[in-house]
Image (cartoon, rainbow, N blue to C red; front, side, top):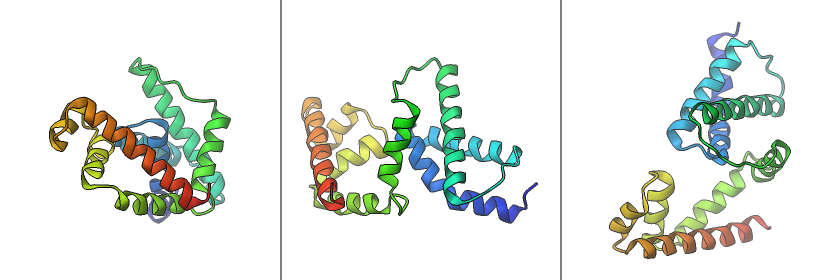
Length: 167
């Protein structure tokens, strides 16, 4: 059994990346928190041998993905995801050697370049999971205008991030 210090180090070293991975799979913030907690509990109970960071991270992602798939089956939800090797390749490309810091820095820079209304719409949609009607009300646009605003903001962010990370 691990000491409290070892458990705390495991969580501290891997929690942020695991939450990002679960969000990458499609979990909302609350579900990602729940899945991450279940993953850490299962890993601790299984007395998983902590090796290097890369191996531990891969184990945690696999465990979290399995918990997410079990939750999808239990709640009878269907989500179409690429094959596991495609998911892992896409994840590794985004995380790079710096655990995704390059992308997060680019995202912050690119968000700052957007207008206030576009940032508000993105925050409501992806930070608070707001409906199109809620976004429409908050931005003063009709629902179709809010949809267009979100699409254009995402397109601008995508292009800006690609330029900044050199893709």
